[in-house]
Image (cartoon, rainbow, N blue to C red):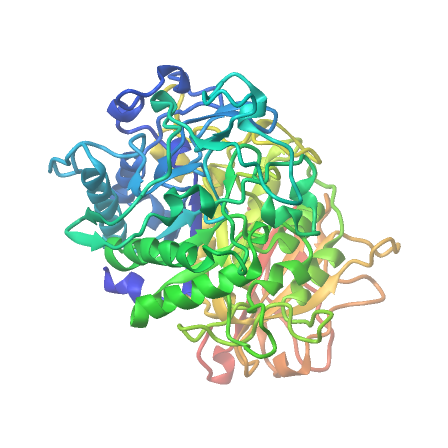
Length: 630
């Protein structure tokens, strides 16, 4: 692995989340895999429920061109790449294809939609699981050669719709009948009529691996636990289970997806955990993947995550210090989000569970503040409170996010993932009514706050989702970023204001260590429903000794502002005050006006100007005191 990537702490990374099928189709030969249903592929790349042809080759070419390096991205998070079920008869009310990758059928194979028959330099790959895995390993190596880490999105809660419920007991999978895809939830017992399906054109088939497998010259000692019906709960699905907290959410199927039986009291618990540990030790330890983003965390028993993370780290040994294990808990409650950074046996054990989580509380609060037409805004105070939660305590008196370090010496507060949009129901930040400028402002927020920033593919061109609406969930933003027809030239993308500003922000993060690792100190926010509301949020990012700091001011209003009001202004904490300092604007997002430097001292409050609908980063100038700059 490239030394620059291996040695870089995760707290210094910038993640780019990409739906692999929706980035770029650079190899048309894999769009309709052998023996697959051709109706699952849309050559016009318009129907978001069908495959569009995006593949690893599309990402490889972007990596080779320096696209991600120019943007300042240091880690690629890919939607699941494993061999998938290609069609389901029931998902969110109807049939869809598995283009997104979350319907795994074979945990030790890469989906043929994503791989090529030869490498970038012309080396042939065999048309089998080993050849597909070889391409994936080469993809990881290629990313590493450019200093880019690879995060593999993984699902341990469920498999795809790999078996059916034989509702009429005739032993035949009636593909057109909803009852054979989905059965109602059974709180007691399970549906005993589950049978493995076999529909080759949709790759609806018994889960693999069903025993040891040879790949890339290595024997992977899997034992077939995923290929046993007894490893699945087979309890069916209810439409309100996704929002429940009474235990049903960890036991039910996910629509037509088949839930693993992860109850720690279950007969197959240890075998199931060990199977997944063996599989992901292969990807992390042998293929070279750098991290795992783990799907649907709260739909799995907490004890499962304790055991999985503990055994996986033990299997990885010293390599565990290089890897990142973070999870998706689709919830805005920090008590629910943070609990998975702790083990379920706390306080007996205070070791970290997951390394970090996606901060949905921040996401929801930031969107409420900024996801409006230009000049309009929500509550910056609620966003400030969400950020302060990261270092405050839960109802048990412990910090919401585990402050105890993991194998790399960093803790969950430092490895929380800061994001403002993704592929799920909350969708893209920029929808109808949200301008390119406001989208740029949102990315500036993500890239100047604590945590590991994560941007969503296409946002670097402010690509709009014209079908999305503020306040409505949907998946309409899952479009192809570089479509075959009407795709913008790469040079045009790189010259756009959005790309240039994100690049400038990532460069500034490298230059100013406090933007990566400094503490968060709130300085100014408007006052809820008070007449002093001004749409402004200001905060400092400061070193532990207070001698190095930057100030970020965000103005979501349609008028130029100065922090504070006529009767109230920012007073910097005493730890940040030194006579003779100056704050110099080093980057402005959303405006061409760079602004002027502002002098301050310990005796006077601080007033900082910021243009309308803009973000300004001020750097503390220390040269006059003979000190090094940030």
